[in-house]
Every structure is written in structure tokens, then in C-alpha cells.
Image (cartoon, rainbow, N blue to C red; front, side):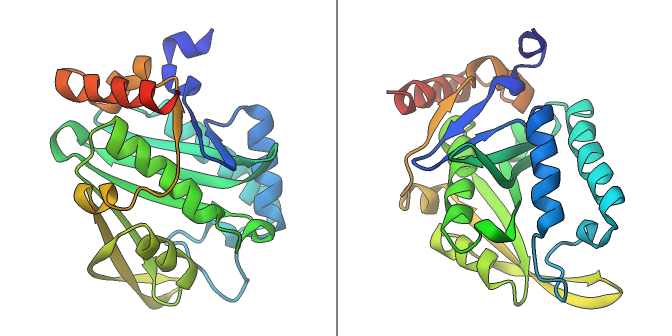
Length: 232
């Protein structure tokens, strides 16, 4: 089975309402349909790369290629875990966790999108909380970073709710216009003081080397312990 050769495929995160998993072919098809039905109002662009501005065929192909590319290019020094988010058997969006040189920096970044029909229900908070648990409790992260353009109240509200603090601004160009990105940072201590969502992690132990924690026996042992605890 493929999971024996690439154990990230067997990773599952479960919260009270959601399951997050590496999408299979059926999940990818469902993700395309969610994206085509709309992710944000057309007059705003919350993404640095305006992938939702494409015509439907190009959007669908681009989403599929992005997922395949991230898996094909995965390495312990540069990885991006894109997980489809499932609620009640329905795919509702995608949550990512990414890092470069994680074994050294112990820093991760997050990104996400959610179909418009599923917004405003607390799903965004719950799905980010799930990958933060993976990062801090299981992989031994020290910090998590995120960012949102000024005016993206929903994303910034999620960050504040989960304990992130402002971390400066970056000037960007989106749709040929200047925008200001508010950077946000969550320390391990702030995360630990606000754990509000129960998260169960499955299939992590064999995937640990692919996340860059191989050779860090203490962190790997902690991750395995956290996994066993969350599965009780």
C-alpha cells in the first residue's frame, strides 16, 4: 500500500466536528466543487496568489496540480501538509501546515480556505486548532505564524481567538494594488494556555521522519506520547 512508503497519507486529525486528512481522489474532486461554488466575495481577494480569479477549468486544474505538487516535492526540510476538512461526511475546505528546516527553526506556518456555505460556523477556528495541536503537541513546534490582509476580519479573529499576537506588517501587491498583510505569531506558551479543542491524532508515528524530527529522539518520543494520549 502507498501509505507504507509515504506514511503522511495515513495521517488523520479529528476534532469534535471535523476530520482532517490528506485528500484522496474523491476528496480532491469534492474540494474542486467547493472551490467552484465560491470561497470569498468576488470584490475582495484574501489570497496573495489570486488563484480563485481563474476561470473554472483553470481553477480546478490548478487546485489539483497544487496538491499533487506538494506531495511530489515533499522533503523533511521543506514540507507542506494540505489536509481536506470534512464535516459530517462533507468536504468543506482545506487546511495547511507548512515548514522549512523545521528540525532547526521549530516554526510552522498555516493557511486555509473554506467554502462560503460553511463560513461563520466556527469551522475555521476548529480546523486551525487541529493543525496547531499537531504542530505543538506532536511535532514539538516552538512557534506558529500566520497572516491576513487588513480587512480580513474572519481570519484575524480566528488568530486572536487561538492566542496569536501581532508580529508586524508586510506590504504586498494583490490584483496589481497595494495591500497590507498583518503578520500574527503564536508561541508555544500562548498555545498551551488556550487549548480549547480536543484533537485526536492517528497515523503519526511512522510519518515523523518526513516532518524533519528524525534524530530528535526526545521530540519523537513526545510526539508518540501525545498521539497515544489523544487517542484514548
